[in-house]
Image (cartoon, rainbow, N blue to C red):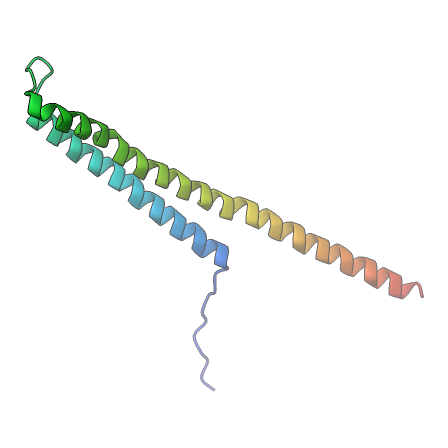
Length: 118
């Protein structure tokens, strides 16, 4: 007889935890890369605060200055959200599983005890 290879099936919450951790790492990396690129671009175009900015470029400077912080903070917020999901799935769901299995064992003992006394 030929034995089939053993496959390990992970519960769904482990897959969700790994996916959330992967996505949080990707979003955090994107936040750092975008922040570095936009900061480099900003300080390349406008090297210092002592040089007056022409009137037609003042709105572009303001917009780039805001985007230089908004986009990376958005990515960092997404990373924090995915880390929270990973924490929720790894801790809370396991605690619920332990509670449910403990209650089912307790219920089985109560049912068996009731049948033995009849």
